[in-house]
Length: 156
Image 1 (cartoon, one colour):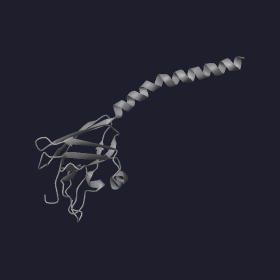
Image 2: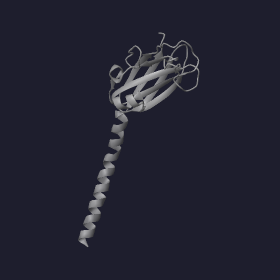
Image 3: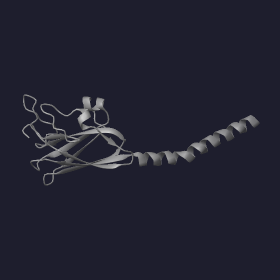
Image 4: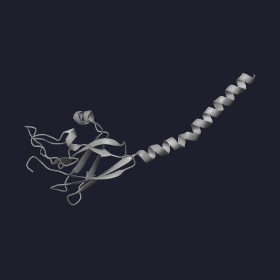
């Protein structure tokens, strides 16, 4: 009989202990979430929308697997996208102006982009897109970081 009441008391104590620390873990996660305020300029028209994709690793970048993404309307040659509840660490951004509104990054028959595009850190590689090392930056826990991406195209 005493053994059963000891087990019940031990289980109750363990449950209370776990409950006591659960709110702390949740609040730490909320504090650790980061955000990005992304301004996209270099747009030649207010037509269409701008797409932004966030990548959390080089492998995701290479395989085009976004950890977050968003769309924004263009207003007076500028678009703004907020990505929130992000994990901290190394990240990189790709963006393009979907000027014709077909929800796709258009290229011509030779694969040359016909819509403007850009990357975090604003690299301008010739005859290719930016690689991870050119676009990567660090996002700190709890930080809201402002990033500006200037779009460009195959013709400048």
